[in-house]
Image 1 (tube, rainbow, N blue to C red):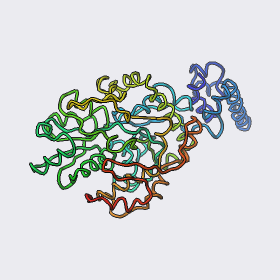
Image 2: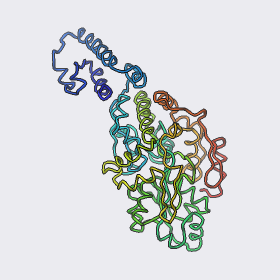
Image 3: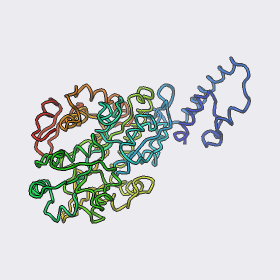
Image 4: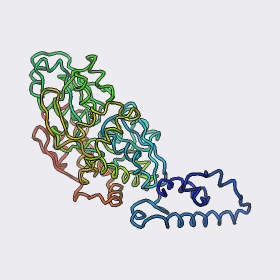
Amino acid sequence: MWLSAWPRFIHFLDKGVRPEGDAFLFGERNVSDTQDKAPIQDPGKRDFMKKTAGLSAAAALMAMVPPGVRSAAWAAGSDAPEKPRLRVGFIPLTDCASVVMASVKGFDRKYGLTITPSKEASWAAVRDKLVNGELDASHVLYGLIYGVQLGIGGPKKDMAVLATINNNGQAITLSKQLKDKGAVDGASLARLVKAEPREYTFAQTFPTGTHAMWLYYWLAAYGIDPFRDVKNIVVPPPQMVANMRVGNMDGFCVGEPWGARAIRDNIGFTAVTTQDIWKDHPEKVLGTSAEFVQKYPNTARAMVAAILDASKYIDDMKNRAEVAKVIAAKSYVNTDYDSIVGRMHGEYDNGNGKKWDDPNYMKFFNGGQVGFPYLSDGMWFLTQHKRWGLLKAHPDYLAVAKQVNRIDIYRDAATMTKTPLPKSGMRSSKLIDGVVWDGKDPARYADSFKIKA
């Protein structure tokens, strides 16, 4: 009970008011009610009473807290969240689950926060609201944050990646019309595009975002130039299926559940999952502005801790059916439960006769391996931005990543939640074309691709 009351308790202390007894804990009084009782007329006495009342209330409340919990939560003094009530954005996708569950299951209150998930219409809306401060933070595309940082994805503003939210779990869907023409994978699609030239249209969700980069990388791996050989457009995730249904696109890359939903609606099939493009790839992040972190560092740490606890909960497979049911609701993803739950359990049907159990399904925690904001992950998106001409010159890849990826904030939150930390801020991966990315020479890597802008 004390945890749910903590944000209001901080508000009382900020106002110099001492909450009284059980009424405070049960929410039966408000600030104005308390301030109206027995006003203190003498300014000196009032200042003294404010200080001692706050200290007495803090001591009384902390005495009720078990020692183990006390050390885990931002519980008193300078460690308290500076801003206890947060508006955190999300787009209707399966991987918004950690933001939603942090609020629904009360993981936020454990750390003195109240998170209100805010459903947004598009990634452009998320970008604008992060930049202007309408959102405190958001479930957001990794590459979007870097695009804003460098001014290539909208207004330029210093940004921050606080944690990686998930790995894996996106897909590239092709239309039934392409399947009827024999295009069922990258190689057969490339043959069709060459044999029957026309304006093939593919959709992604944001120019600098993850889905654009997965789509471009996959097409190029099979010899298809994503800008010369086909046309690409931007469509918000929840609108992908409807647009394919009316023939506006030949394929799209988006997060679940919209790949699975296209199969259930019998309008398309999964040509490739993104985990087959890059196993355990970085995907969504908990993003915010650098200004927010500078102004509210304790809040940022507490928010990451709440997301990590929610991620642990989601990755316990016995909880996934419950999570799928929660996020399927109209206020969140707004789709049917069955479109979400299968792929959340790693149960895949590509809509073209293949079914399999994928060990590389969408993961939110994975023993603590998911959340860490690897510098090499951020740098990879910059290499692809340079590859496709979004950046005209090579940036200082490592310096940008060190500025954006707030490993210091994440490390503190990991300590709070007893989340293991990797030994290095860099990691190595082999992608679908056999090329290894390790972050050691990003400029050479970006220039090494045969197909590029």
